Length: 342
Image (cartoon, one colour):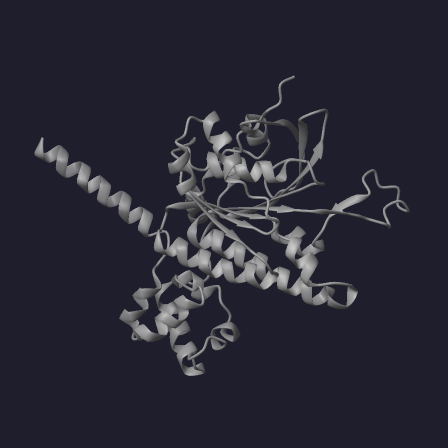
């Protein structure tokens, strides 16, 4: 009996170690002669892991108040000692990819299209006109993320960054009823922030990184609904386009890094625009997602949504590194996104 008990505690310990070892804490730099005050400064600017330092350029580190060039060199050198820089075999990487989990969308058809659901360590982007179900999908994911799923997925918390003021806790309660979840506990697992400007949106990502670091392995999904709305407002006209795309690229790069650093899924929604030149080239669909090539290259998987009959919606893989172009039909119900009833 005692031996069994010992075994379970050992297993628990090993599980804990696995969970912890997904990222190296920045505090471990102390063993390499970096002082606590400097580590605190790095943390305050949203760098909380060793990988986070690797993902930050020297120029950006120098911009942190109180970090001199000599300190940057020292920090980078210490980081180099602690990480195996460079290459790994595809076999080793495939082993690392086993940590990737998938979150159900609430519709089996849509999950099948996505190869099992929204993938972690990746950015999944959905775009479509208004009323195609982007925000409904975001709300449904807030609930389904909390449910244990296939392949040992344990469920976890959600961070929701809202730029269009479309987040409704009452809607989450309706979706929770479908899965028989307690309203209070379910809402308690969703962290909500309203972003007012594109700069504020970027600052919130630093808070998100700090939160993910505080509670490792607890958060599984980060939703930004919608990614482009504030950029459309803050930057106007052709004159500010280059500046807007630069800022947008930085934000998407930050999202991608957060998803890889803390093994979370990132789900973003995007708007559409009418393409005035499309009528000349006889395209079937004269509308296209906004954000241009920057968003197109940053998103791992892109899904386009369009309206079908009644409550039916059609999702199509627009771009994906490992899934074929195909379509799935789902419907928007009182309990969120579900399979379409023929």
